[in-house]
Image 1 (cartoon, helix red, strand yellow):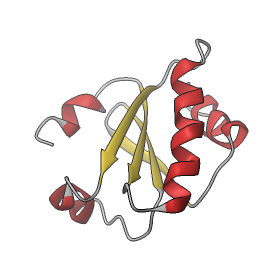
Image 2 (cartoon, one colour; image 1 turned 90 degrees about the vertical axis):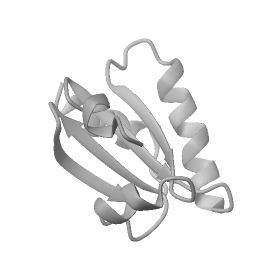
Image 3 (cartoon, one colour; image 1 turned 60 degrees about the vertical axis):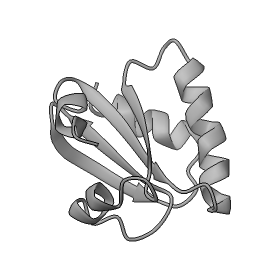
Length: 97
């Protein structure tokens, strides 16, 4: 993903690192879809398949799946792994908005 830095450059971004073979990633994927459809969420939501973007995942030290990174204006502000609820993810975004 050549434009990753550009995508997280401005505002708040939630970046979901997942793999299609990962069971917990599918659960989080459904939660991410809810966030994408929630008009009150102003964060940029980015989904990255680690099998397709191994170089980026390695660079960002993604060690377990799912891992969610929260960026503000290009800087990583938070990182969580495992299944998280919509409420938990919304709170991570709200802290930075």
